[in-house]
Length: 147
Image 1 (cartoon, rainbow, N blue to C red):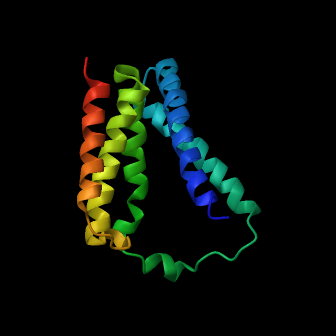
Image 2: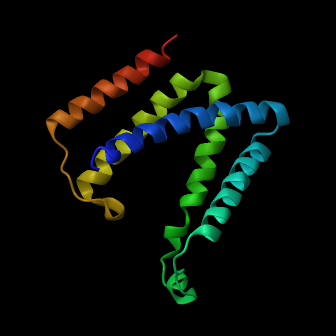
């Protein structure tokens, strides 16, 4: 069962890469990046609505939603940013260049979040080995994007 927690992120990476290509084609067909991002999120929202309708579990009370800190509702805004950036960037710099930069940004941010336990992430201190790995990744991002 533990292998699923290693396999699913790999599949999510595959899905993100394919999604960026599909969304880029949608943007090109529609000729508007924000409308393409809106359509992408709308289709995802409809899919989630259908899944929720089929899900046989009790939903949180209205009070539960009210008690949640405001910033915890901003994940969708970050998703809009990510999808819109990929819509714009993949056509200009290609999927490999774009994703190596995204991954570099993700890993540097994850390293800091882990080290300080930001946003409820379990603390996991920065080590020389991790810093070396991040340095190699950043160098790799430079090499992949070098013309």
